[in-house]
Image (cartoon, rainbow, N blue to C red; front, side, top):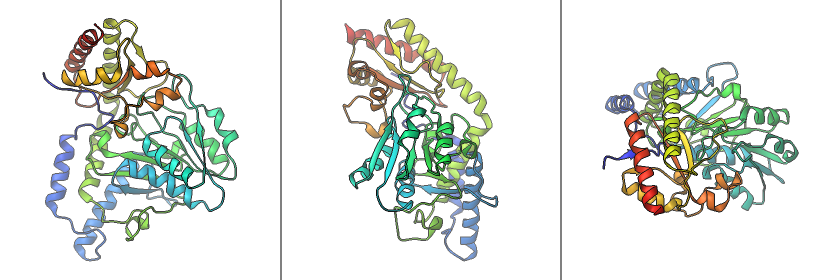
Length: 384
């Protein structure tokens, strides 16, 4: 059968314009941007131009009197680790606390749990049954020991958008930095770093049709942060190692392609998702779309199927050429049900019957129609 790829939240195919821009960058044979000779200076200018333009597309400003900063990383996972650990550790020794939401990606929960193992206090913000972080839980948790708060901009499992600007306002009033994982939002909806009011924001290029192997951490001008790696002066010592110019150009090109058509792109994804959900509801009685009453990203649908085990359905769909997931790609291989759905109060049975479907720039109307037919057929076969 012709494959139907509905796992774009895990990674999405690189855009042809990005491939061509990177090909040209690689063919140019740039020198090391840390070198002081003329070829090195040219490489440095190319890299810094890309850095400034990427930041601008994300609502930051690297050129004003109090400039923001953009640190290139190898992935969004590294950017999240750098934010949680780097910001937390930079704010001084002594008894310390980190606060995260209960629905964070493993790349935020992991470093937070590492701090817990190091003697820190770890508190989590709960969510509503629709998967929205409970803002009212934050103020009572904050204290002089709070070093960093991290709440994602939108959830990777359900697509639910989070009240990050409201949370940032609370943190800023107390002088506490708030980091947001914006990985699933970048390249789907506009991001305005400065308007959000956050201290730090993470993105990963391969989630918005850019290349694998590069992410970025945006930092507000006044945010102190410690590096996690050592041995080089690059990027003000925050992330040593020779920067990959071709990857930076690929990230920039992907954002520029998105910016050019973002309104139509978001509208199209939302329409496709609506057709997908309505089509499945018409064919499968008792189907549950998680968080369908909350504001969601246009490309994400998390669905519980009555009477079948989610892992069994996942494998059966893969056999029929439909690629989807049971949650975060970073948690693949685990039989544990989605922590996001558990945090929303879903029963183990309901969460265990759930799969995530995520659409992307290459998804077509015909694929949606065929996917609905295949999923309904497989569900019927398994249930019988």
